[in-house]
Image 1 (cartoon, rainbow, N blue to C red):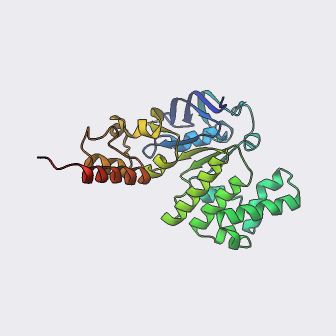
Image 2: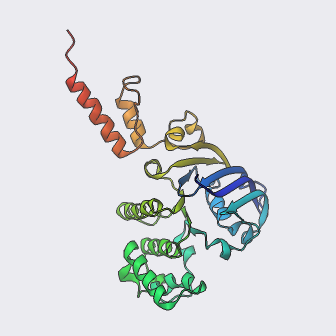
Image 3: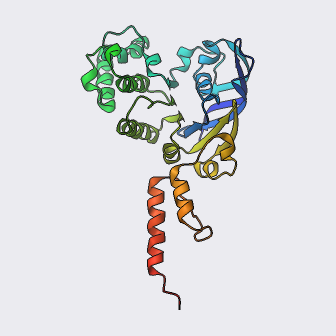
Length: 292
């Protein structure tokens, strides 16, 4: 039986001196090994929920909360962010917020969290070498983090979270500074991490990517979860447009090309599904006998 790693129970939160709540009665569960995506318009509460999952709310941000969040059995309001970080890691939307600003080199930046945990020196060097190769930042190890480009800092930020080997990785739009090729490379790494057993919670605006990677999708609007389920259940919902979210382009393409009722499943959500579906339709059309 798959265990529940994250339990959010009717959680609400309002930032100090704000009149409106940022999160309202949020309830969700994330099982071990799942890949969960959170989508929604800007300002819908996605980043706030990420901060709550890793304990920055209520341990760092000042505000008012109701409900409960547990991560691997630990109440986020009762333990420190440091203790939670042994289980769950966060990659910020702004990668520059990830930097410690105490390191003179990227290698020292990657060593920062390991040093706080008392990892032996030889083991530390081994982990840094391994993660640098994985994230393709080998040539940056001797550079000052403050002299890197936005895309390079994004890779370093992700590496600094992965190197601590958390059970859960929370990604708040972790490819915003990367070009399409770089984004695809990073997502390939994230996919492999998930396949290795790491639980992923990802905020993203790329619906094609969400449909390709996620096991479960939650739609947020005005701080509440308004829709949830598998990618197929969410992106095929007639309510989706009400929440300022569009399905993947492949859905619209295949729905427009394939006549309703022509096949049991007349839509696709991902590139591979769209190619396979259209190939099947073309093959069937070619092999139909002409009408008398």
